[in-house]
Image (cartoon, rainbow, N blue to C red):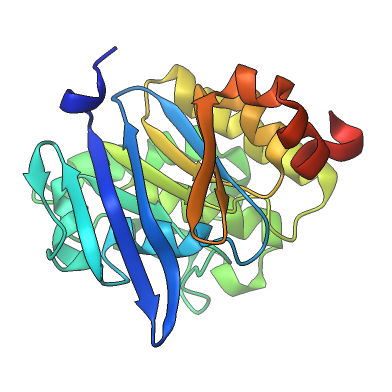
Length: 244
């Protein structure tokens, strides 16, 4: 495994402001190729803000973001996708008035490798997410929340990312569907997909992740192996509760 100096993603002293409010107060993290790294924390901690900053949807007020050794701090978000960063956003945000198949096509909008390769990748997503295959001609807005979450992940994977950003994939989903979503995350990990995962269901996230960071009010307060953080008394008390 590569060390921090040669990480796929490296964030240094990142700051993000919303007007007078400082949402991120100098956070630093790294993600190595092939890892699943999770960020856990409560509501309002800044988790989604961090993901948006990495994907280029929120501007950095300070610090730096490097991907594949290239400084992307000021790079527009739409240019980060062909570079290799794709996000499955919080709240899913599928194209409700487009079919499942068309949503997947839109995930590959920047690709230049031809229709046959894109069609093959769509079939690959249908193999990973059989429920989407059954609904390929259905309007995305008419599907359940769990199905839309699967579609959001599959759409991001259509970009063939080197780094997949998963922002709150379990949000608002029933327990059985959450279990299914995390099974998919484990499957992607086994396929070698590098994932940065933001998740409020800390126990589930720490089980699937290699490393973890705890974000509280815009700062990282703990970091380490996911197994160590699962055993940490502070993490257990604050985030795992009855699930510890």
